[in-house]
Amino acid sequence: MLYLVNAAEDPDDATYVQAEMRILAWVGKPVIVLLNQLGAPREPALEAAERARWSAHLSGHAIVRAVLALDAFARCWVQESVLLGAVAGLLAARSQEGFARLRAAWRARHETVFERSMQALAQGLARTALDSEPLVGGGLAQQLRAAGARVGIGRSAPEGAREQAMQALAGRLDAAIRQSTNELIAAHGLRGQARDEILARVASQYTVSRRVDEGRAAILGGLISGSLVGLKADLATGGLTLGGGLLAGGLIGALSAAGLARGYNRIRGTKQDSLAWADEVLDDGVVAALLAYLVVAHFGRGRGEWDSPSAPAHWEPVVRGALAARRSEWSALWQRRQPAPADEAERAERQRSLAALLQACLAECAREVLGRLYPDSPLTGPSSARSSAPRPAGSG
Image 1 (cartoon, rainbow, N blue to C red):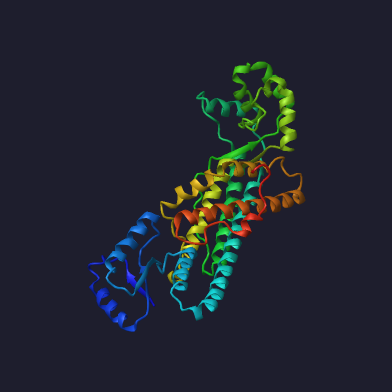
Image 2: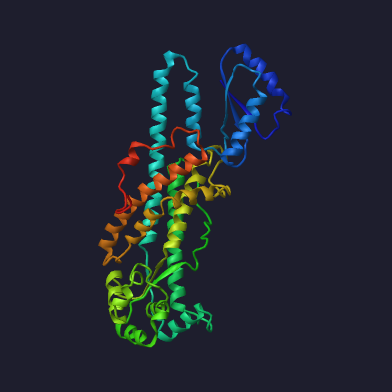
């Protein structure tokens, strides 16, 4: 039998529980106590302490076989798996086979929802990673002002073209976030749509892909000493320090400024100035995607229509910790943006390939996060589906 208690009450104040336990003892069935009305999801240690408190309070009743946390409004499917496991352990032998089939069907359904969720998030991230916006204007004088402002000399002049490009990128990012969230909501059988999603910490995090004029780069190479090579690269590229190896390992000494410009343009495949999201934005996008999944996965159907609740504070450090352990994998994925796609057909193919790799990495990270949040669940460990998923080249 399943017995719900109001976990918002102190066990000692809930005097009716003891009386009802005596009544349930007359039935002669084992009881699983479910702690309801726990509020927002809490850290594993706090939840374990709450279970221990109620277990101690009910320790005098032999019929109580387990005390589990299962809030009706804020529970996750992996918590339900713990309940199903507890029920299986209390069933008679004649009922085991049938219940095993039910558990298998339940798991298959939720694994399908999980994979659909990871696919939706991966496709949105792939679109964002490969997105770019043409950037028109911004001559050498403007670049010099911007570079001087970065080192404390003068002030950067307003750049209308850059602002317009940034707004276009931000608008598409907002649309991608909304679409992914709506797909998560639908996959989980919820009603409603994402509203007023907040784009945090992205307004200034973008990468400028500026086609370098080789003659200008040669002039700058002659004017600026080797000790200021980083600033020289900034001036030549309009704000991007090329940070992918051309300035490392002594390679800069083997390249003239004009040769560096040719190498940069050839590597990027850049035909015109453009604006694209920086790797830091994409990293934050992965964090936001996994947090969005957790919020939707914890949204109980009894709460009604989706209302964009906030994520508990302890989730983000757990998510970032899981991503940090795979830093090289994510860096390798973002490197797949280079060179820039030559046309829409190549962009679409690159997006499909990147989305497949992102889905595999997202699924691994999501399972690790769920395992850290719910260490008692049997569904957060390795699965056969993960072992066959594609991996980024060079990720090990």
